[in-house]
Length: 484
Image (cartoon, rainbow, N blue to C red; front, side, top):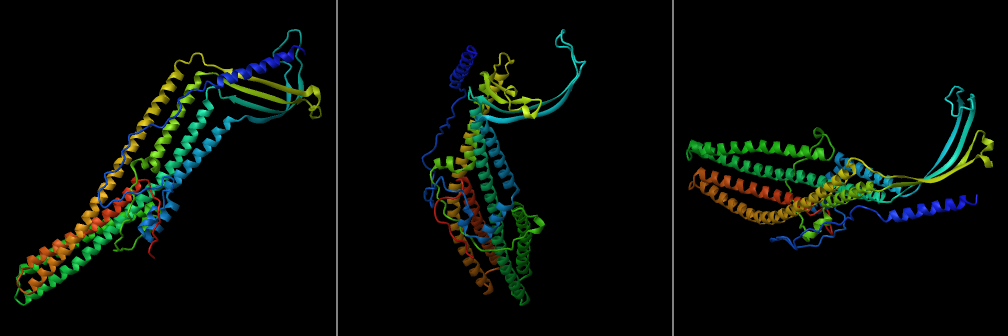
């Protein structure tokens, strides 16, 4: 006994020293976020004003800034019923569960081994000793033994697994926010497309009424002998052509209505939106700085977290080069009778470690490491591509919205001019000075100008939604209250 204790103490010291030495040999590159060349400012055109969106602010509900209660209700319905959002939420829950499971590997695993087995041993079993014959034996084997196992994270394999799982969970959270942003942006896009068509249909309805009045005037003048058959045929042809456009717009509106139904989780045959020709002005969007995109856009955040997860996989793969050491301890009792469990002869225990070191694997570890490095390089390229696409979308939205706002202002001037021309042409035609063709030309010009103004108003709303999505969602500042 005097020699056994120093031996066990030496074993413990050796294991401890080995663990301390190898624990400092953690492998795998330390993750560093790539530095990208970012411009200092956007190419801003009037009437834009540079704002300062707060990066840590929630990315919604940005749609409230349009002050449209019907849109607000549809967004709430979409967020509650969208299958895409449910899928993203489930994936986020899965990723967090994986992180919790992997994180458990950082701690010792404690369990209890309990066995109660009644066994009959054959008398004809192979001999283990030629001088000792076998006998048939029936006995009970009862074991109660708590056990502890712990893997020493020598090369950082476990910590790399946890780091990768954490990055994947954060990526799933960013993906959830991105799905939410895309869902609300797609719904707003379909909704404003539908409302733009409502305004266009209202323009057509008013022009059809004007054209019918012109046709009635031409027929009256024809009956009085002051106009020819051509004077009647021309406004009739214009009216027929305009009526064709009504059904074309009706079909397009139905498609957007069906899209809204799907986005809100409603079967298309059960959904409808009443027409409304009210003009909604888009909110003024503060554009901030280009570098804001790196933190505000959830797809950029997702791509950056994917890089971190890919980097952690390199550490996991490289850890296979080094020994895998696990500590184990067991203390309990084994007996053929329960009443003998707590007697001295029944106690059992074990303590030690197991180590596995690959010697030859045919290049498997090398291949895994090279594969993870290639995966990381691909993740870096995807991140850079995502940032470049984000910059392009934001710049397109900024320049496009500024141009559309100027064009819409000019279109309203054109509508006013075309309306004055029609009034003059109609008055001259009623007085017998102008021809029916002058009135028809003026009506066509007014219809084209009003439809263009309606389309530009719709494009302003759509481009505003596009820009809000490109900039990552809502921004700091008061939100307007929707008119009831």
